[in-house]
Image 1: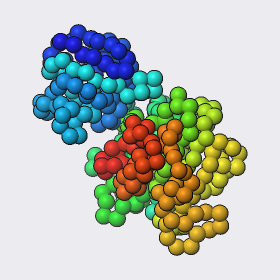
Image 2 (image 1 turned 135 degrees about the vertical axis):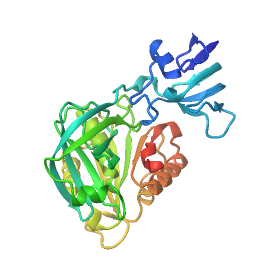
Image 3 (image 1 turned 60 degrees about the vertical axis):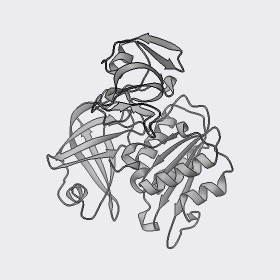
Amino acid sequence: MDLHIRPLGRTLSVEPGANLLETLRANDVPISYSCMAGRCGICRYKVISGHLLGSSGELRQPSLPGQDEILACQSTLAGPLTIEIPEPDEVVVYPAKILKGIVVAMEAATHDIQILHIKPNKPLEHAPGQFATLQFTPDHIRPYSMASITGDDVLEFHIRLVLGGRVSPYVFETLKIGDAVRVSGPLGASYLRAKHSGPILCVAGGTGLAPALSIIRGARAASMAEPIHLYFGVRTAQDLYCADRLSAWAGSDPNFHLHIVIANGAVPPNLRRGLVTDAITEDWKSLSGFRAYLCGPPPLVEATTILAKRLGLPPEHIYADAFYSTGF
């Protein structure tokens, strides 16, 4: 049977029962992947026609709502199929690793945010904007975004205290410098598209600033000349952090444009009041030609996604990991 691959225009002769990701890799078809187990969400593709079997043996076909985008590592070929590979020129392949790390610094960024610095025993190569799973103990495991980029000796994570939560109270109350942490990753498909030649929109809320920092740092490290517009939204002025770092970047890089938006309470000079979506609406009549990276609480991601589409940005140019939109 035939497997048709768009936009590459390739046709492969394949056997039923084969794993789709393994088939694509064996035939040198460019597709991003990492964990190979359905956790990272990177090997996503779109079904144009035909059908296949999902991870639990269920029939998947594009005529069913919500089933046109599927993970290749969780797909089994079951008949003739036509698929579309997203952005084949932006493929990243960083096989997931499990590393040992040591907590080397803990910084109280606000009343409820800790910046955690972990030194891994080996380098963790990753694309800017990806995340990793941290295991502090067998009972304290959570995914957190990295503010780091490949080449950093120390990985940086931003962790918000969730009252009644299982993991964040452990970080705030028990974790200490010198403790061992297991780091698993990289994970996540909301990574910097380094070959994009247009403007970049980063929207961050709360600790969603971490992946936004990674994306901005990655773009600067790659000497990308495209303008970067960061909209960083917080609830009140006391929730604002990393402002000095961001202001220094804005002062030294004419391509970096900073917009800090405070929803409630007093607003310091030169900052903006309201919601991030309102600020974007005030500043832009169209987002055509942009790439948008949305990082933060689900309501922020969902509202900004709706706005970005309304301002002319195609859904395939809006990046937000399931980690943010589903609470994974």
